[in-house]
Image (tube, rainbow, N blue to C red; front, side):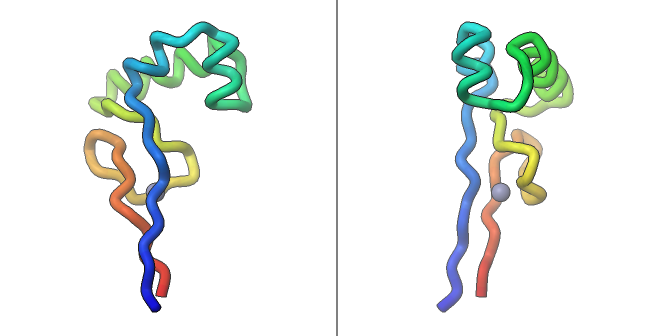
Length: 70
Ligand SMILES: [Zn+2]
């Protein structure tokens, strides 16, 4: 049976509101400063959510569009 899986996404504004320690726990690997810089760049590129590096099916906001598995 075909199924579709989705990566979870987190609003970038929520992540930027976290402390460095919380950010490192949520988005490891990376330091708080590195992760924050990455999120700011994503925001500058027009994304509103963080979905993860291993997702290759995203809309312009960064939301996972789903991965079909047959
Ligand atoms: Zn995905």
